[in-house]
Image (tube, rainbow, N blue to C red; front, side, top):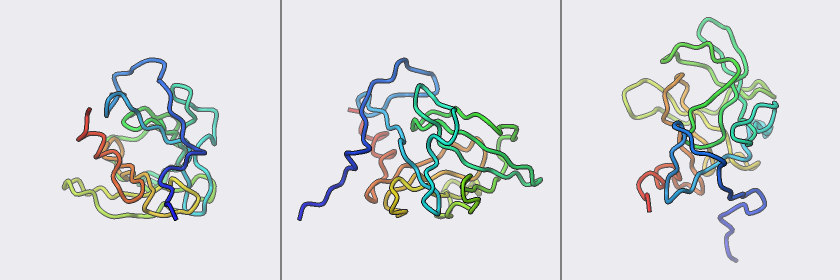
Length: 165
C-alpha cells in the first residue's frame, strides 16, 4: 500500500500578487501558505474572521497577556510573513497564553525553544487527525519569530531555508 504524504485536496500552489519586505520567497520562489489549521478539539482556525493577507484567510488565535487581558489575533497564513491584526497591543517579549478561539482550550505545549529566550512551542495541527507529525509550532512570546512547520515529522520550514535552489 502506497502511503499518501500530501493532502492533495487541500494543496494549492499559486503565485503571490506582489512581494513584500516581510515575506521572502524561499526554495526557488516557493512559498508555504497554511490553508487549514486545527485547534486542540479539531476546530478549524483558518477563516474565522474576514481578515486576510494577500487574499489568504488569517489563522486566528485567542491570546491572553499576563495582566489577564485577552483578545483575538489574526496571523498571516503565509509562512515567514510577520503580519498580524486584531489584538496586537502587546509589548515585544511578553509571554502569552495561547488558546483555540472556538473551544477556548489551551493549545498543546510541544516543548521549549532552544535559544535561551524562555519561549515554548505550542501547536496548531495541519490535519483533522490532530497529530504532532503535522503541526505549525508557534512560540508563546510576542514578536519572537521562531515558528516551524512540521509535516510528516519533517521540519518543512528548516528544509526550505537550507535548500534555496
